[in-house]
Image (cartoon, rainbow, N blue to C red; front, side, top):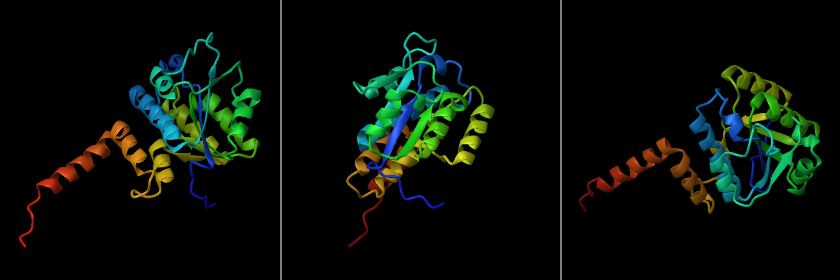
Length: 212
């Protein structure tokens, strides 16, 4: 299957249960890198003005509130609080929020990969959405459980992506009007790539001027 490029106009980014209580038990990814990826994905949604739906459990649950860095980036963006549904589409407020975005392509990330992410992705596929699983902004108890869940979702029809590749797909061209968003995300969340660009610019600035 050949997919048309994802665009901000046809994509909703969905963040599921990025809660501090879960972060304490995730072992499939480095915790600091995982949180940084999640924040980068949220910024991508806001900078490129995609659809954005955020959900978490009730504040009285052991999972607790959203990651503080994520909450800070989201500002006053609403967070849909669910009761006990693994599949967020069983929550009418969540399902309606996704429908209201008017977009049929969903880029979903969350924790845990084999729990609420898996069930929400399968729920989205049943609803007829085209689903992209943001694998590096999702995490699980172990690498094994994360990988097994990713394989099951891919076999069901979800397409694995990474958050920064999504930003690049939205940008299309380094010369486009959206390129400053991509460059900002790179500087703030992809330091190795940003340092490579800085090294190139520094070397270029110091290169001798050809004789006329």
